Image (cartoon, rainbow over all chains, first blue to last red; front, side, top):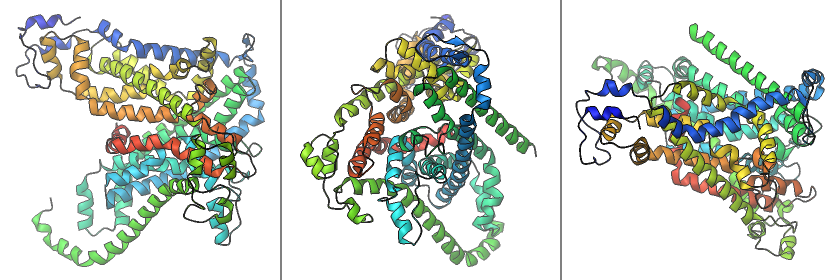
Length: 319
Length: 309
């Protein structure tokens, strides 16, 4: 152990009870700051470091390498240079997957963020009940598989209560999961239900940082709640909102579980999102090399989207 | 807070306020209640369906109460009903080996949680309370791990686990999770950082080793945070789908989420056993609801915390 500095002060014979924090006069502090705990630290981070190297770092490098190979999982990977990337540019299913995913992300994030702000502001202005926040959070804690099954039933064409309600008010039944036009909005809706409460709580946390005095002042000045929202809440919330958007967009791009349980990419290719397409290539077609290429493309896209968002955010901060 | 000079506008406001606020507030409450209703309705509907007789479901699609109430669907899922009983109520007769999958989910989530909390807290301690060259760099590199889309490393990890011969084993299932979770390290580091260094220095002076300080002093102080983290990790592990689907589809290690997916895929297209599916769904969600009820308050507050920092 490298606590040689302890010699500079008399060692008290009895161990202090844990929790006796206050000890006055830290003359030796500057010297203690300079200590080097490298070997202890290595021991402490050893398991995490091992996990990081074996299951994050090496796979990331290997994934990049695989993207330049042709590999069916049985024989050895065969290096093919940029072939996979050329194939990717001409792969209609890849572009379809991107398009479908983009549609999903826009619908999902657009509606989810508006609803989340609404919920957060309502909870903040009406009641801060932990109970209520707990209820709102509940869907987010459910497995995606569970959520998918719940809505598969509720939105079932024949027996689902959703379609029954539509029929009862005189509308046509909607094949929510079965129509090419409806499937992406439907799955977006399912995940809005699961995520809006969680997103609302993130925004609610941001709201707590807004000084209450501003609201009181505005109320004294006779401003309506509507005006207060647009003039005070929203402008001050912008940094938090931007952060929440970055996180939720990255998450939204990675929609998989719901698709795997409900539509398997169908009808036709209408819900074949990028994550599911990669999964199919790798584990149903055993086209590992090309799947790795698709995964690299996804990483590049995610990094690109994030960088653009952060740039926009910074630009807005300037003005 | 308000200066006394503002008495006059306050009065003016008091005159106009009651009516306008009441109407607006009423509308706002109505919206909030609607949101709560939308949030809770699917759970209620699953319960209502799970308690119905599957054969009778089509006869009354909109009934708010269970149709021809029975606990048959739950018994079916839990393997307590005979094939004849199951088929009489519209089940498929093929049973979900629920207890086995439940056990597998518990094993998987428990190992992952124990490993992540222990190893992440060790690492977080080193990042927060020890001084060593390269510390911040390594921490930053760990954080990048948070941003890598899982599918990118899932492909090579699957190959690795396969080559090690660990497919369809618990070691293979937990391997990528048990040692490392960037989020957990980040989360706990915040709490370690917030502890006053006085405590630590006192212990150092008394000749305590770093491990003693970590285990005997620091961990008890941040126990509430550790409990919250453990619950978050447990729920995340419980909900994990893609990895167990790839690595552990076999029955002896199949977890509940994967089993539910298979159960759904095997449900006949014509007259599916909705009551059974909903019962299975509810039972799979139950452990999480129980955990949530136990530590809900802390969890709700932790969402704020991690959201902010």
